[in-house]
Length: 368
Ligand SMILES: Cc1ncc(COP(=O)(O)O)c(C=O)c1O
Ligand SMILES: [Zn+2]
Image (cartoon, rainbow, N blue to C red; front, side, top):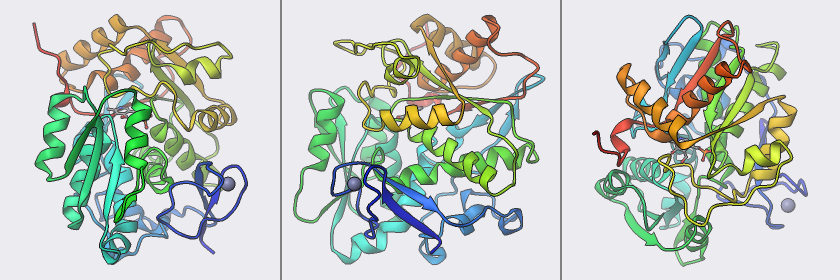
């Protein structure tokens, strides 16, 4: 057996690839029973699918690709690199999860004459809508009422049905999960294959740096798919004896939406009544995978940082003035890096990768 999908709590195996949670209600997790081998990388494929050998539940002829992955790793200063995930086909890192999830499922969904449903603050919805379109699948995307205009338009242009839901982010998820004839819920936050697709990002960072891994990696965290996927990828490389140690993974959050930061540092957290942060993609005040994130971040000997609104805005402007136009939510990771340098919690001598997760054209901010 090359892989298993099992419950993270009761360990029950979940043989149906369409399942998004265990019958006990807990999240599912993929377990890999094979090694990463450099010689199995398809060197002439300049997309995520150069790693097709390491996604055994996807049949090669059923891959739905828009050319995602193998994004540039650009040197920014002596030891700091940006991983340009904003350059993915729909403008965010979510395409890694979508290509893997949709490739694995589309034939089954089509055979059942069904459609997929997803809930998202914007980027994952746009991404799933695009891959559904490429696969010829019908998609219904549930979004919060205040979804950013450019993301809403993007989802609509891909041809998905969009349902706006008022209330909290959890309410949006609840609506998307409601059972309905012909509807398969494949929400990216819970579905284990979406998260699993993100592990390709760790492989790429390691390969693009020539396998010696960086000392530190900064990434923004909301629902935790990016964090968990990246940790999983590096763990797989360690277990396969391809790299020796885990880079220090730094989870970056906004003051308003920082449940992971607080739980990780054993502090209490009260979510704001209304989220007004310019980092509008980071809205999970009560993420279903929070316990999971804390466990994996601790095991990986990672760290967590919290940044203020003015720090995010300044980082966003500074990045743009240097030619990197990304979403304010992505600037959170750069703001956290700068903060740790200033506080001497990080050093300029450490080789560092900052993941720029989403493109600037998605922002609703207007220049002065
Ligand atoms: C641009 C951007 N960056 C970071 C994140 C955080 O990713 P995750 O929800 O997997 O923690 C998101 C999630 O929506 C996003 O859209
Ligand atoms: Zn279970």
